[in-house]
Length: 222
Ligand SMILES: C[S@@+](CC[C@H](N)C(=O)[O-])C[C@H]1O[C@@H](n2cnc3c(N)ncnc32)[C@H](O)[C@@H]1O
Image 1 (cartoon, helix red, strand yellow):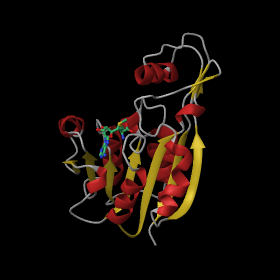
Image 2 (cartoon, rainbow, N blue to C red; image 1 turned 90 degrees about the vertical axis):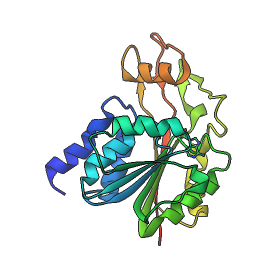
Image 3 (cartoon, rainbow, N blue to C red; image 1 turned 135 degrees about the vertical axis):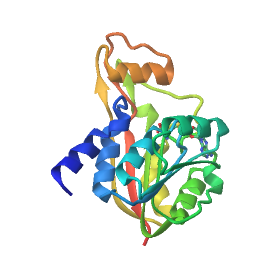
């Protein structure tokens, strides 16, 4: 990989305001994601990760932006208007069914919301070609802190699912190639405070914040 490609991935242009883009960049660099890859972004939401992936795989690649919410499809269509290689699909991760086997199945901030996280990771494992990759990124919400006090997310079904992630990937029949946790932190105005406010409605003022650590697991299908 050339030096300018590394900095492009490190920058992840489509994710400029995303405080969690560093672990995503680390994971994608580790895989060697590049031109022509087929990817699935499961629980794609507004599609900012799908767009960032599309920029990396180029016009010869493909990104299936999958979400169970039909409204997400319109959002992705708007976000990816300039990227014909992004295909938005309305599907639940539990019923994942893609038109082709992919090189990478990815999810972030999805498994904390689903009924059965292992069922979804199994479907992602089944969606990749032999030798293909599954990358999952989920939080340990209660390990986040505002002024030293733990964070909570009462609306999520599994707010601490990140703590189980390596076992989920293994139990889905994948080899765990790498796994780590990373937490953005900050004090005062800035992206960390803005992100916390958008997530919880809490404005931290001058209190120090550690956002929920995001556990990344890279799995590979044998
Ligand atoms: C918190 S958003 C994450 C968006 C994006 N992955 C990100 O990291 O910015 C979670 C998304 O997962 C979707 N979702 C929830 N349950 C799902 C399921 N069972 N299957 C597919 N998508 C689901 C929601 O509609 C929502 O768009």
